[in-house]
Length: 184
Image (tube, rainbow, N blue to C red; front, side):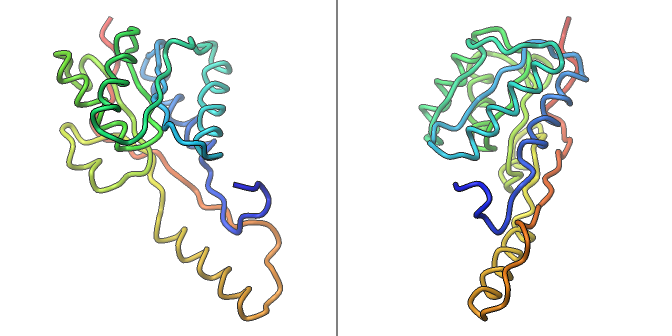
């Protein structure tokens, strides 16, 4: 939570920019953000990166195209239904579990993914491939992240000099079948 004090940082801002870029490149102009309702710097940074990329692409964010929820499935489904009701054609989610709730909400509203609504998640947990169609999502390499954090902790415990700056772990967008060109 304290910038500059972490031994490992993720390229989350760049990843969120790539999510918005992917959706915009497909032709989406009404892109919603389904945020995690937790007071974490990670999620605040994702929101800022989402809005900045919309602005950079001339798609200034409509405040109504935003919803936030905890990961509790019923609450998240209702929040996703409200977001879909704003007329979005695509949703960028802060987490794959929120994306699952967006799928659930779309199904309840009679919408098909990706024909009627494109959805992108974040984390690339196993659940992302269990959804139908499989979820386009940002992959966080948990093994790399864990190894680097452990290495830095062990170095510190062994009294080795601190490495200069945090290790940067690259995130990448994994394209699957949950996004498509919007219907005109």
